[in-house]
Image (tube, rainbow, N blue to C red; front, side, top):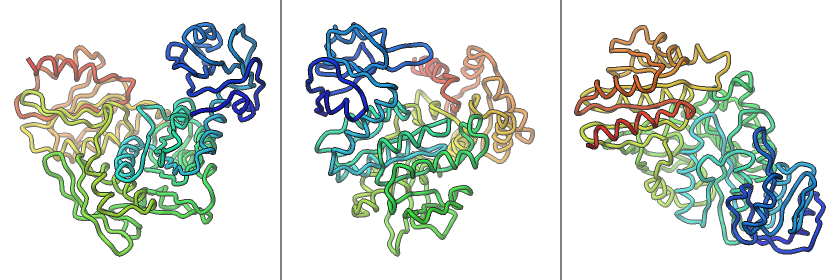
Length: 452
């Protein structure tokens, strides 16, 4: 990125005070200021970037972007809303890159895995960047766009949200050439009212896409299969639904890998991904469809999927001592809880132990959603169920037909103690909860004990 302050001021409808110069990066953290950086003063409930203008200047900022008057020895761009200016600047910069294809993706669950798989596919043929970590909001998304280089050929942009309008603002900035909606579940239903509300919010992605652009949808999802958008090219993927463009068949799992055949447009391609669970097959199908839309050879798409590596705390499978640990603590919804239970149930272990924590942001649907997860365990090949958290007690209440042992905990220390007393050589244990429950604390205690 190389932009003059005068160009930036015009792009964000701001006023430049001081001399003009070129900036080569953007930061919203005064402690992380690369040379030649524009420091943007964001405001939140508990912080105000305007308080750190002098610190940013001392650390090497070339200029600052502000909403209110500040004392500054470096050039200042003044705007009405610094958050909007960040999105506007990213959108302007994206528009200057002529050889770039942006893939924008959203969905209730599976966003990050689909992002990683799509990145793995596109990296086989294109110089590609992706959203890093959890930078999928109105601050992180434009920062990703501003990392683009002149020779970047593809960008995989993840868009999260929990309120109406958020995806609309991000998609108008990133302007995807290809869109993906992984599925419609109940994540963030507390703020969106219903699954129809969630569908409406996810479809905001179209507001930044050109007419005729491909929108890739899960054809097995009861909400997405009803989507009618005649101005766009709807591309469906699935497993159960035979009337889709990309369908997975002959699915087999072995030794942490899943192999299947993708049937598409009268052709077929064998695929193997280094992950287990049907939910990962759906994510791989979405990534396969992106590769196909970008005119990649099917064999090259398959090669990319084989090179996929899971990120963060999303369903990493580790063997520690004599036990197998399935870490899936980044986030949780009813659909992803059930998918994780499917994975655990498939393990041929001594015993299968599920540690399930609270699912957050479900609002009035919280109790019934937790109870439904509990009921789902009844027909699974699971031996022991531990729940953690006040909401997760409803999982135990819903598991009335579960024939194994059930214990509920409010205290993390007590949960850890009980788990360590329970585990035996050859067991497999799943950890699944919303990020706020911090189940990784229990996992780390388990690792320390079993690695000794």
